[in-house]
Image: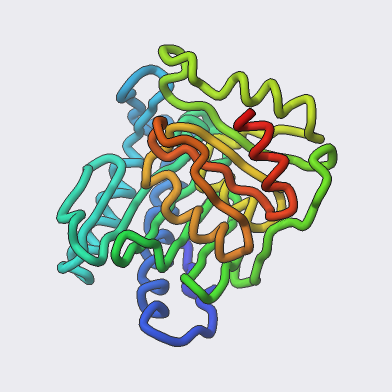
Length: 269
């Protein structure tokens, strides 16, 4: 299977259209790598920080393909990538890459994983693509021009009652060593909502909130590459995204506007 995402390229004008086309091309290349390795016997799984922080050969090959494309087509741009680190990240234009978000799912044979690619200008995302290749779902956004799922415009939910809300969250990799690990917040929230889901990919959680599949999402201690693309997709779909902590890296709440105050009260008592 070869993934061609440029079929979804919307009819938009301006300088961002070719940049979105490039991001879609890179995401498709990474997605092809994911699918080639998914549920195979040669994913070459290792760990980084601890047993919960997994990396596979698919992570590394997908990132290498994306970085190579950027070097060839955008040699003046900087890069922030999960596996290979920072490269001229002080430049005005920079790409923020998570080559395989949801590696734990991927390595276990679960289909909820994605590639996340954002292009930032002056530290603000202007183009974003999140592809869940096994699910066949491609989310993307352009600053000021909206968000799409497989070429169809999306917007967040309008649900206004927390008791009817389905929300998503995740847990940090240091949860075993740091008691500030989101368990207390999950326990409080679980008694108030219709359901809590843990998908295992921050990028997908943000995109599903953008599409109205989730009504809100929060998580602690994320990295820039986890959220750069998903944040833009969510905000362009009408989601309110805000920081909920100043001491736990990127810790954010993304909610439809009608539920924002209630979500904030539960998470920040």
